[in-house]
Length: 331
Image (cartoon, rainbow, N blue to C red; front, side):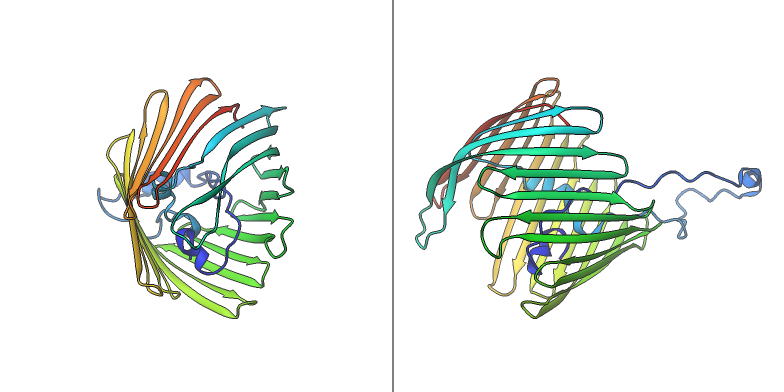
């Protein structure tokens, strides 16, 4: 299901940012403006509803607070712009990798890798590529075929058998609706549609088919948003229910909470988080029903230079993760 629930269908690669906003339409009836009758304040123009958020980004505001980019160890990112459209990136990571285990204790092994990337950004086209020293490669493509139609490609290649992935998306943006068609490896096919039914409420649904596993499913979703609050709900035929609520307390402070229930194993999880912007830093954190507490700090030292701090504490499993890093350059 889009966003949080999409893993119920298949494990597709992460999706790129949504398509660019539509260009403003020139008014060709300026001479008729004097003949138009202004609508009373508060009256809804049902023929001119806003375009909703794409189906796979219904919970993007909640995820900003509840899913910070936590890491363990040391990280250094450097981005060198070559011109206004092309840039190169270098990333070094040294930390620990968790190993699967049957015992409740967490086992970790030291790991380190270097990542090289190339980025091309254009108003109509975005190309991003990454390659790691362990042989993993990833690529993301976004191309605006027209003002309303966008093509997205995501690919991940690994040395391990059956772990490489690829997905094609075609997104269509209408005046008050969005539609998306997806197909990927493992004979995965999916589609979703979301429609604004009022100035603040949008309803949608999705359907998918996973050919290799001979599984199909469908989902329903709703999103209600105002200037201060955002509420979303998603339900999948696989038995997953996801709810989220976001409250903008001010221009700098945002609070979010979510709830997820899995009918198959009768498990429920919930979390509450915050996103606070200061003059020189951004602080995000959360605590969930499993007792895990996390925080992520981005401190701007200078223009294009950010200092990173990450912490995640799981007292039940006695698993503690701390990380620090430096990010230089922007693209």
